[in-house]
Image 1: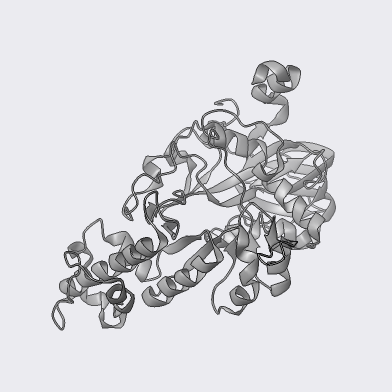
Image 2: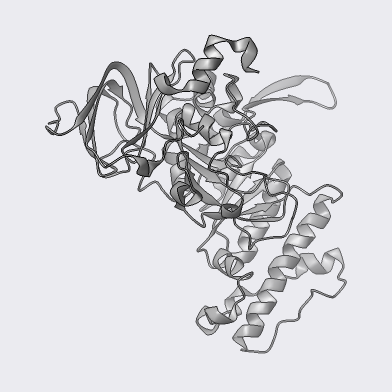
Length: 437
């Protein structure tokens, strides 16, 4: 693993010139016979007629295809555990649970993923704060790109709870926080605390914070506890909410939380999101969503028993709803290398399926590059091959959406962090598959 995930700081800064058969820029047209010059961690030049500095190390791969490093917008990859044991912990951070030696990160790098939004799992309520990390580094500090990145909220009730109780608890948590902030502000008296009161479900539904009454200039930061500061940033729009909506009906509850608490939010949708394509398209200010790895479902008519195939990504695309893809995670994903070529575990496969199902190729590639980068607030750095952006580039032996292609090399911020010819774990697997499992 250490050989595979070489440290970004292990190599001195150097100028590298990539010469490839084709470069998929995502931000514009593909460039045939492309040259990409990387210097000081950034893309310095890209095109066909590019002057290569005399001091550059030239990587000449005339049949290869370069594309932006893949971006994973929603994942537990890199975590020792998915942080679902405690349901109400907005103040915790994934930084305390990231394992730089995780085989999951090594495997992501092997498949061209360079940026991962590491965030709590789905069976939670307030799951804490996430972080954007690189897929190569020896320490947590070397991995981190951005923290905090977002706060995880979920409408999926934990074991032993139901949706009604989970939603009531979410409303109560926001109102209790509002009460504490109102008390600190000291203007107009304290809002009534409900922490120790037994209210009916109707009371909770009708009890909403009056955020307009809070003048944040009158709420000194030093008087806000460390546990409450992430919630403060959340309701002020300084910290994005990632809201897990496992069923279509949960989306309406998410809208309620967003509207009641002025949240800047991204919806993480379930398999039946196709039902809401038009509603999502009509929602003002929603932005891109994250769809479930299950791209197609069979909808059964309860009366006739007839089944109809529903293609969630295609229905969302036709409705004008931009989205990012996510992949499946194995229960043993972080316990050992996952070498399988099983499709839904890999972003390139999911994007290829979109094309197979009828989505334009350029739009499919955006779902694993620039759109997820935009969702996690790093699209100014990654997600496309453009001058000035971080030199995060994956080089494939052929077309990235062809199952026969392999990731040959990966660069993160101009440093070569993966080369298939030096991947000893993969070499052992291909040499003797039977003994590798």
